[in-house]
Length: 180
Image (cartoon, rainbow, N blue to C red; front, side, top):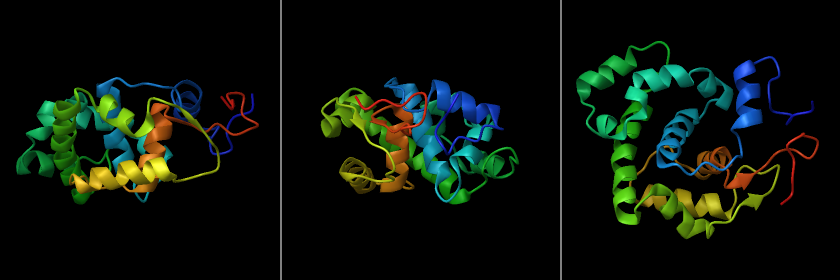
């Protein structure tokens, strides 16, 4: 089976992610939150690196329980910084806590984070390949940064939009390719 050229076929987690999750619409707020956290940890690294540590992140970050993460204190940050199974970047860990509070504020303002995203997408799926940013990722990134989020540049947001299925980007040779 032919897959997207970026998919490391020697990594079963990556193949599973590519085949069953990437670019598939999933607008459940818990999933949207998890993916935003994971994508923000990707900044400067590969997605494969983050994906390989996903289960460890899940354990370290209390199963991505937003209420718990919003209340993390210095002791918890120090605990995370000592966890060799996750990406131990203090700026990203602190950003996760801060971004979680902003995520909750957006949920309260719009009802769900997906409703917030729909104000940019008009609930449509974009089909495009070979891009790392676009006007949509630029606009969402700019708004999230204006709200105070960190590690949400346009490239990270583009990857996020692919991950949750708003941007469909399977390569033309991939068995999952479609153009609408």
